[in-house]
Length: 166
Length: 166
DNA sequence: TACGTTTCGTATGTATGCTGTCAATCTTCT
DNA sequence: AGAAGATTGACAGCATACATACGAAACGTA
Image (cartoon, rainbow over all chains, first blue to last red; front, side):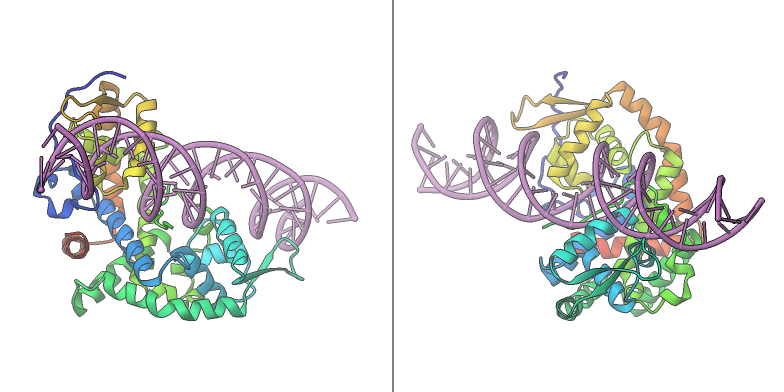
């Protein structure tokens, strides 16, 4: 590859200099795009989840476990539709949950294509252990907003989602 | 263990039964969590991006390309800080951009550890080609919001991000 | 100037996410 | 019933994401 001149731009570690505290970065067009804000918020949400909940269960695994617990007997495709994941992704998620002994795959008597999903007792215990921490992470995520803003934020999120998914 | 995942491309399977149009799914606790809404919005944003821009360039690659174009000579760690990605992830992204001939890696005369990054002419052309479609996708993402709501949404996003990253 | 600490880019491993394809199976239309 | 179409789950493949660790190189301090 070609040799390039050093532009002299400051070099810093990503965890040290978030762009939201760096005025010199504010001219990057990216920082005016709602998609960029949403992506950063998603990163923050996952980080808070991991901090609160710990390494025992991932956000995706928690979502799947909670959904199966509320809808026992659902298939993988139904679960994917329920929590908004891809069918191909869910397979691996269930694999890992099954490996931990938290979810059991079973055959359906109605439809032999379907893997009937159910939460085990261990899975229910893990869910109960994680849920308070999950709620704490959700609370911390919107901690900077007051009550009115939280309501407005949720309303606008749902409005956009209904527009695109509904 | 890491668990951050931004989507890559449009979803299809779950698109058939969006939970936001399914009243029977509204009792799933997940659907009241801001983290869940943000994740779904991120999926929508990626899907709109891919629809508008096409398979030529991914959201991450666009972000990297745009940032390098505005800050020529930046290193990989600096780029990661600029657009909010992980240092380890950026390596692969730059690999693919370099393979397409859109970005060139060079050695710094100041600091021999640094890979100085620069956008090639082809890269600039690709950036110019993609940018209108990217802006269109951003516009469509918030299409359901009126002018006041858009301003409020951006303000709240920045408020939360500043709280967690600033 | 010797040395401990940081930072840079890279490699590895795990976990998402989505596309596309396939075989098995269910449903619908003829 | 039989053919056509749709659905389910598995699998391969690509592209994120991040933690950890490593060697090379730069930096701070004694």
